[in-house]
Length: 121
Image 1 (spheres, rainbow, N blue to C red):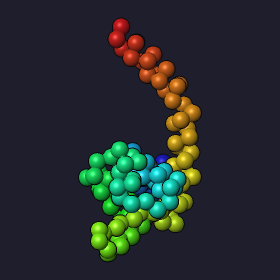
Image 2 (cartoon, one colour):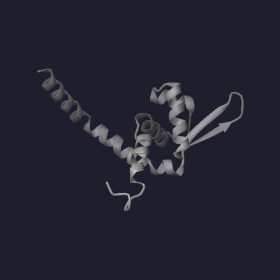
Image 3 (cartoon, rainbow, N blue to C red):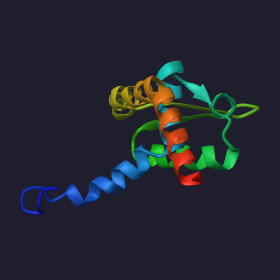
Image 4 (cartoon, rainbow, N blue to C red):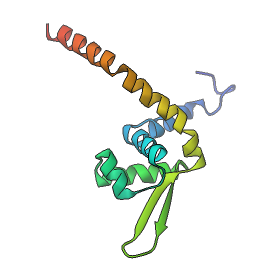
């Protein structure tokens, strides 16, 4: 990494990557990128995530400026989420990561099998 004189904020990269790179954040961004605006329960159903974890993830993404939360005061209340402009700019790297994972699933499975067999001996 660069030293503090050349890159005073480089030490904060870990902080940002831990937020935007966790499993649920990536999946929320992918879902919102693919479907646009979604309600809480739609996201929950799409991802198979617990209510508590989704709520926490959405709050963190909103705090970081990646997700908009829109509350519609009606009965029953309606809350929708969509990507902000910064969240939209995150689509490309997240999509690249997702496509990489899909393209390499069989190689990863084979590597795991080889590793597990070697450990078992």
